[in-house]
Length: 142
Image 1 (cartoon, rainbow, N blue to C red):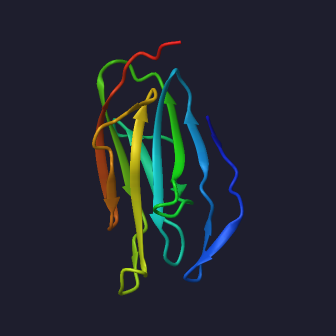
Image 2 (cartoon, helix red, strand yellow):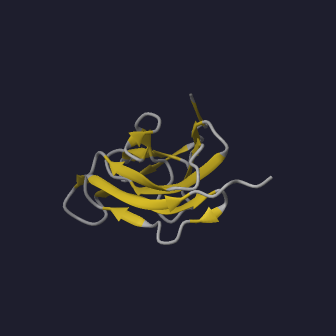
């Protein structure tokens, strides 16, 4: 079960229509894992998947926010427990037009787990592929 937030107005960047930042919630459970995602769009938006411990959560996602603009908010709900988990973001559709301003990239701008920042959870995916982060869940307090 998942919900996807609405996409607001669009802007045009280098002949690419890019949606504004989106907010998406996937899964269910008492723990909250939040990813901030952004992109450098070129001939379309960056597409990606998110997995926890090798299991993809939700469908293919499409980035909306442009890099440096605050990022999309992707919230994964689950019952993660106190063990360490691997969160993997897979960039699916790199594009290159021959220069830095014609390059589609995906950025992981940060991750929080139950409102606590995951140290070092920042990455730029400049080519199709994956990056992984180790997160350790803590019991959520009321």
